[in-house]
Image 1 (cartoon, rainbow over the protein chains, first blue to last red):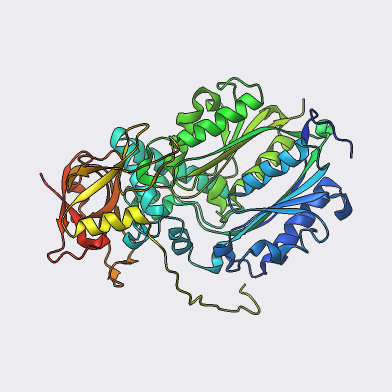
Image 2 (cartoon, helix red, strand yellow):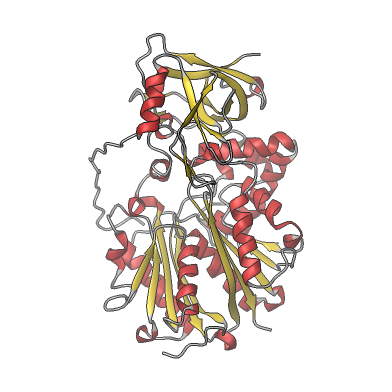
Length: 354
Length: 150
């Protein structure tokens, strides 16, 4: 295979199945639906796919090494498949590395999550230290409450602003999402989740599968994959400054360096994986001037439905579609996160073809 | 629409987690009301709960340093979702307070329950003190929760 290692990578096609509150189909059925749509969108056949990268987490699927259950429907029989047990955007980053390495010409990226199968909070509680934190009942929403407290303690207007942010995201998501629009005052008046966060402030769990076809030699494609970066912070939330996201900062800086972009180079579109509104504040802290004029989650982002492990690839799908439809947006930043208090952070930079 | 055939499966498995040497020592010390952090020889950071390795400096840690059972509330939340208290096996009634506490002598923060669940009485920066179980047994729940001092 002769692949130009310095040539561009393009987003050849995208597909999705969901989000829905409770998809009655099996995981392979959901995944097949998304994959067929992505292949159709890319106008490629199964035989054109050189390799597949998937993202899933066993506990959410209730199956050990759960990727083996989707081998057929992702076209990976007799093909190399790599599985990432993290956010779906990391699977896309791994696929881009395979393309950059010249190992493949076309890679299919797939992520799925079916939150309706089991209690999300209980499964996520297993992601924190089992010796000290799990016995205390610490889970992702508890930690989010602590983070949000740190931010609103410094900014007395933060909670009211979060009410408006959530109302905006939920209104944008309502036509295609799993939850209805809510007025800002109702967001604030909703039952408390972990103060100062209310239940209405949490992006609703959902079932979804996403698929993306990435291709080397992508110069002729309308959306190009420009660069990416990812990073991990310490596992223990108590070791970290929870009022900032240094891991996101490092991931973003790596992506900018790789793209030869100044850190304040403007983005026209942001597709962040923010399950709670204070996480948007943390993202803005990192991006600063780069996000000043950006459209943020025009489709409502995770408020359309937050599928475990699949959210970041969902953001990539939304961003690629938006850049195709509105190339004037120019450059997009896609964000994925995983682990307690966003321990893992990943970003990818996409550009609309000139 | 619901699934035509939905198979319900309850995973009935039990795991035995090894806590590691540092946590074993930490728990044993609790029976004497003693709290110790591990200090990194590179950055000097004092980790609590103690763990064997500083991820920032990539150094093993062996130096124990004393930590008081009083500290500062760095962040707090009041959780309104009932949980099964893993320490007792009983449901923990909601709402309950949860804090991030920096004990005097440590540099990292500790998650723990707060005796107070009224947001009007909780403040970042408040001084807090551990409330100990009357009969100590060298276990993680020898500290029942933290109470606000002022």
